[in-house]
Image (cartoon, rainbow over all chains, first blue to last red; front, side, top):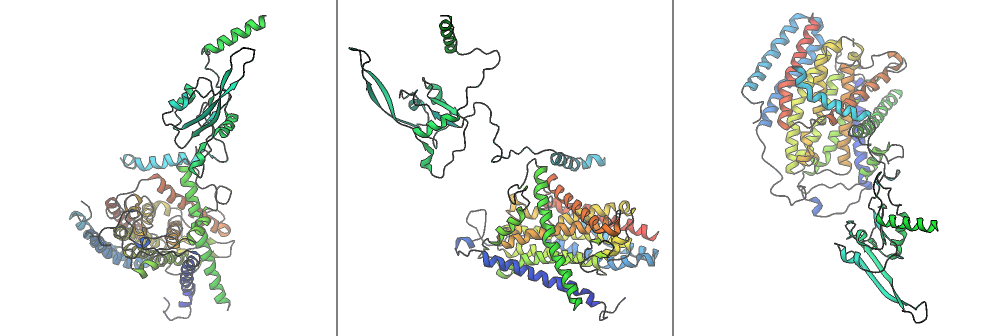
Length: 126
Length: 174
Length: 322
């Protein structure tokens, strides 16, 4: 385990930092080329919201159901599980049975939660 | 049990794979001329020597797309004291292809075989006015009219051909 | 100085791969999809069977007008394509190609937590589509954005769980390490994981049959409705770059990366071959299957893939510990 400020650890991420910069430059270049080459004919009709060719009705927002929120909720729970899963996966072979049982209990509790949500009908749409 | 569940998935893959490995049926049109069936209707051609301006085609056309102008010319009598003959001469014979519906009625009713079908179809124009073909253009389409299709095996030929062959036989017999 | 040059060279090679491989996959999609549908696909661009079609498309998109709707949130709307595109380039840095004639493994940067990094980068890419959907000020885009959010969140999970099972067998998160540690019997043990990862990855990329958010018959183009010109092209490039990244990840994690005859010399060729094969499967899935309905998409994620992924994790745990 290397310390964060070790001389050999952070420089290993130099390429990663460089590629992020290159990526941003690429996006800027693509949009820049577009700005140089494109025509710019202003027209009020062009800036109206697209609704299959008819005149747009009402606001740009629509009502959304609560089930999307439920999926986000379930996702957060399992995402936390996943975050703990990765470091555990690395040391599983060394620690052996104890680690397996422990993670089994952890995932089991979450699976019970998922089963509860399933039984409650949250995962089915009407 | 599992096979019954995944059957649709398997069939989708199988059909698409079969299509992938076979030659596609696309006809590469501009590079390859299409294989048109016989008697295809592409454009109507005019043989004006045969036309007597009887106006049958213009009258029978359901779309009124044929415009004919003609005048009578007098041919003096061939012998002394004979009757002067008159002949209709076409001034104008237009077919407006923007209206024509390719129903073939004009060709069927023409008693003098002045109108013929040609399989040419590539005469699209940029201006609507250019879709009205005048007499000269209709004459050029005659070069593309194919010879009449062969008769089906065992079919009877038309009566005029029987009469013609009888005349030829008597002439050769002489 | 040569350190900086080395970094720059790696970045340029990764950038080159990022700009060419999606186009190759895109051209393969044009032609393969066409022949599967009994037609020929692009034939005119570039003379020989339309090989330059996507290049021509790129030039076309570059000179098109970019219109920002009056109702849109300007900054969010204009930045969304970049947010969708750049994470895939960043993810490509950590994906190995394999040994290059005994010179070591071709890779941008071999990170110790390569797998975690790639998955995290792919998740950031999701934000781009979301920004596009919610920032367009358009009801269709908004609905599409909500669908995108639900779908992508639901499918993150099986993907991450399946990837974790691959990391468990190898004992490392480094992608080079995972590919090096591959053994042929893994193919059998990891088969559910492979299926789960591939299907979840397809859904992450919103590729048919999981393109309910982009359902063109229903929502015009979902979150991408208001986009045109280069911004639209960036979204499309992001989709194909995503296919390449997904194929590369599947290959490295589940198909053994560069395993094959003469792996020391031609390992990179084996990896590329497998990436092309998996990309072909992605294209084949698009042609062969109809679109899943929105509720079917979520049911598949939560009721089929997540339990299957959890089962795979359990199986792998048993295999590792025993």
